[in-house]
Length: 136
Image 1 (tube, helix red, strand yellow):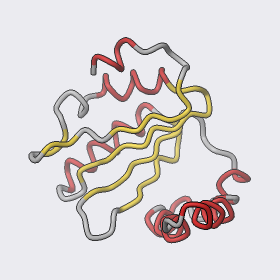
Image 2 (cartoon, one colour; image 1 turned 180 degrees about the vertical axis):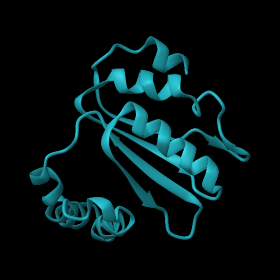
Image 3 (tube, helix red, strand yellow; image 1 turned 90 degrees about the vertical axis):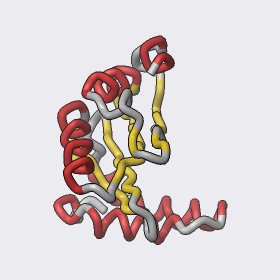
């Protein structure tokens, strides 16, 4: 949390959060203040990608509500296959339809370049976020 408290506002396009130990999410991260501070650190079009605890429905729901309180809609979920993890994607500004519709093409290009399953990730993102399906 010290880094988040000291960092300059409006200075990050992407913040990645993976703050788990063997017992769940670190207590400092599972707080409104943390997510609020991160939203201030992001640029206007910035994104917070955070690892959420998906094995416990009430904890996941609480985490998603906190993201929805501090970020623009939609807050997207990507369920990690074979794990209890859920990746939450929170935007400082709602992405345009054009950006989201270009996701498939971007996923294909990234897969070609890096050899990772980006096309599959994009499909899973679409399935997990049916309320926003017209974008994906």
